[in-house]
Length: 285
Figure: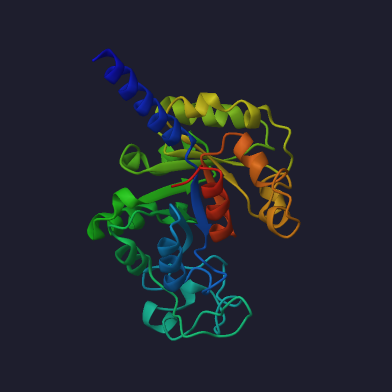
């Protein structure tokens, strides 16, 4: 009996260790290498690929509908011109998204509702970037579609600003503050949040990799919150980026560096390659 108990403890410890070591992968604007960025197709491709989260950006139309668009205008990513707020949803749907080569595709601009319903029930979360002006409308839509638990709200504001703007949503939404480590007071911003909210994660951005928080962020992780580090362009991660990992095949100073600094979520523009790499290191299922 004692041997069985010891065996079960070892098995449990192994599972616990794996759970602690698993790193989540977030696909930035979906699988935009194989479909237009911020397209419904790109998000479904990313989900099928096995990412843990997709990131998208919100804007509002003239008639108050929430749509997916990163830029202030639709000029770069569609065959139209102007701001999303210049058009009703019906008008905006007449435009089409461009693919990575700048060619016009058959993909329309999706609504947040369309994306959430397409991903509903799938093992993938949705990170709501550029959503801070629309939290109330977003919350109502997520409640309506039964997808609130799948969504992660985010903003680069201190806790006092969030509480002042959206006091009724504190504790009702899954939330992740974005904290720029280059700015003074970064640690206080994090500790203020940890003192008042149960956070899903903390997104750390930095153009210089000198912050002590990068090496010593156990005060975040010990609360159960995850540590999010981007492997996108160099200005967000001090140069430890996707291109270094892939184009120069330098994993040591890119993805391995991010892993060594305790990231439990990595947002990437190379989701398929990062997933493969993490699986090889037994850091992803």
